[in-house]
Length: 187
Ligand code: AMP
Image: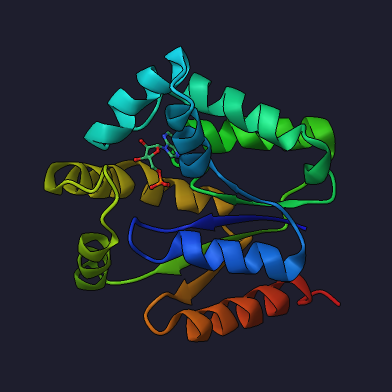
């Protein structure tokens, strides 16, 4: 099973993706988490990445794509994966498509987790992550609307939209239902 989860910051994407991946028995591949691991390692690359994530800007596509290539080449990713936070723009979406075509591993579904701005801001302010400054938050939201939202059309016909407002388990059930229904629609 190969899935993408797309949504604005604060929609509960990371939490829901972790649960989904556990439930389906596939690795949860979060580019944000991978970047945070690089930063924590104190490497030269980590330092360069930190400058982008701290300001709320996107890390350059080439760096991000290289990291995704390496992660998807790991043995545990052969049986499938849930990609969280990637792709975030049209360049990355086209690049991923080419990679999957080359590997003959088509994407099954792009899952959109949605929530209104008020809910997003409330959640972000209670999250307390070091890159959750007011400036970085508003920059990420602007980038989401400018770059990620237009990218969603790319997955037309392969998308399910799920309401991210509610308790964690409630939203998880909603996601499982929507994904299972979409995957078995052709049965
Ligand atoms: P996230 O954990 O998804 O909120 O990501 C945290 C930060 O990592 C983002 O604000 C970006 O700076 C960077 N990042 C994560 N995914 C990507 C991506 N697909 N392309 C570029 N930068 C990314």
